[in-house]
Image 1: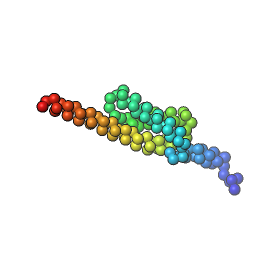
Image 2: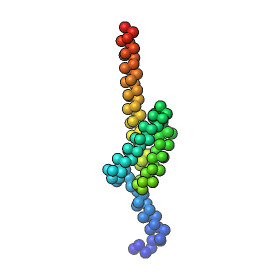
Image 3: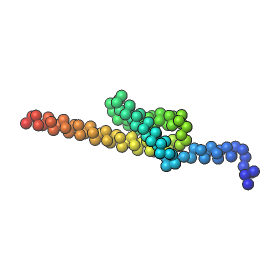
Length: 116
């Protein structure tokens, strides 16, 4: 049956089989490593720039992360990494903004108490 398939076709099938890994097919350790790297990149960006990354900045961070994933030898689609990590970064942004709002509320409350 496989005699009708050319050599290039077999190579393409083998290549696509290696690159079809989805997030759910990664091991727990691979997922953990990717998310820890993403969080480190996120924290580094926030501490250096003093603002949360917006869409284009998140894309740049994810591109840097994807290069590290490829260097590590983890085969996964870029779209899968983007989907998962972008969602997490937006979640981290919301948490960061909530913390900043709480700090601002505390400052306002302390200012009102001292004025009275």
